[in-house]
Amino acid sequence: MQYSSVMVHVSPSEVALNRIALAAELAERFAAVLIGIAARPVNIQVFNEYGGLEDRVIKHELNIAVAQITDAERLFKRAAMGRNSLEWRSKIGRTTPFIIEQARAADLIVIANDEGEAMRHGEFGIDPGELLVQAGRPLLVVPAKATELSVNRALIAWKNTREARRSLRDSLPLLKEAEVSVIAVAEADDDPGLTDVCAYLGRHGIVAQAILREGDDADAFDQILQAARERDVDLIIAGGYGHRRTTEWLFGGVTRSLLGQWSGSCFLAH
Image (cartoon, rainbow, N blue to C red; front, side, top):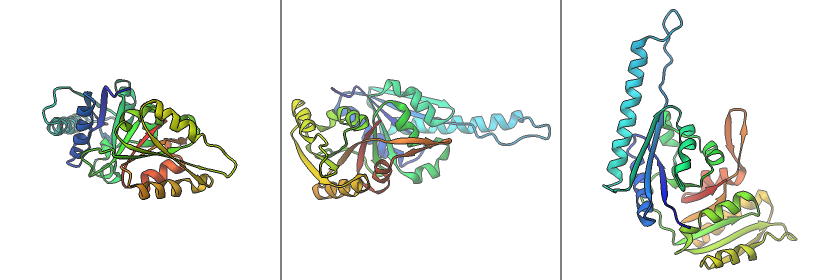
C-alpha cells in the first residue's frame, strides 16, 4: 500500500506554508500527487430597507472571497516549490463540506492542529470533527510550526474497534522505516489482541513492540501520552472518534485529548 495522492488544507496565511511544505515533502516521498484545497463562503449579511441584498454588496463580498482564494492558491504554489505533480481545487462555499466532497481524490488529508489560525482566517476554517467523521479518509494532523514529518518512532494507540483497525491499516506506509510500539489500555482480565496486531504488522514487514497497561477508558489518554513521551515518538496513530450534538461535531474523549494536549503529529481515521 502506498499513498498516491496527498491533500492539504490551504488558507491565505503564512503559517499555512508550513503544512503545505510538510505535505509536499510527504507527497515527494511517496511519488504522490499533491492536492491543495481551499474554500470560503461569501460573507453577505447586509440587507437594504426592502429586505433584499444590494448588488454592489454582493459583488464586493464576492470579490473579496475570490481574491482571498487566489491568494491561497499563490501561497500553495509557492510552498510546493515547483513540484510538477500538483492539483488545485477551490470553491466559493463552506470549507469543510467542500473538502469532504473532494476527499474522494485523496489517500490522506493533511490539516493543522491550530485553533489560532482558525480565529485569524475563520472563513477558511474547518470543523475537524466533521471532517474526520464524514470524509472517509485518514487525517494527518500536524503542529502549526511543523514543516516536515519525520517518523522515526511511532506509537499506535490500540483499541479493538473499527476506527482503530482502519487507522492501523491506513498508516502502514508511514510505518515502514519507523520504530513502532503498540499500546493498549485494558482491564486486568481483558485481552485487547496485541499479539494479533503485532503479527499483522510483522506480515507487512514492520517489527512492533507491544505495551499493555492496566486501566479503563478514563485512564487511556494519560497512559498513551506517558508512553509517547517515554519513547519520544514523532507520531501517534489512533482511531478517530466523534459524534454529532445538534449542529456541532465533537471528538470523542481520547481523540479530543490527543488533539488538545499532544504537541506532536497524530494520524486519525474513522
